[in-house]
Length: 202
Image (cartoon, rainbow, N blue to C red; front, side, top):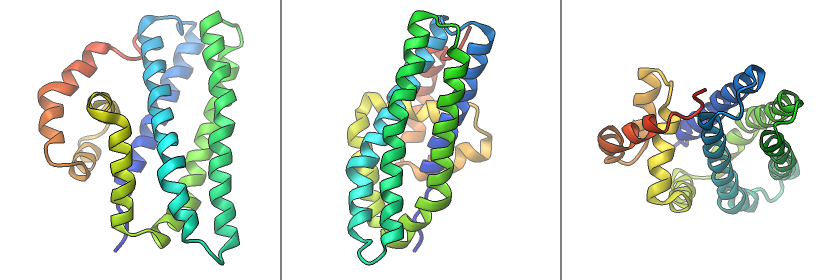
């Protein structure tokens, strides 16, 4: 039985969307707007949670199943190295936003290249390996670790963030992959709170 990567793909798409928002704000010279700063803070938090849990709860069990598969084991090392390479790029953007540096757009471009290349690499090379060596039960354990890291307040921010700007079909697929109560709670509470934050507005 194959693993359902719907949530992973949806999360990656949300990161790509936010990078577009960030680039647009930087080009317009509006990165200091409160909505842009709030959007950036949410983006960096979501990325930190996503990669921290992958490093702690996904790559180790995958690596443990790759005995005798050196090229695939090396791929896991590449995933971890790409995560580490993101840190200086994130710091560079953060510093440029804080100091209103003239080279913010260039730093955003560098971050976008590093992160989008990493996500494409993960989707095309790492997810097939994960699907080959982990079971749906293993994947559920990883998702549980992600949920614990987010916590209730984190889920309240994460779910409507992922769903922002999705098509009705994408929305339906994502919510179908989440625990049953999530769709109702998101509709009743989380989405309204998310909209009120006006992330990326300027």
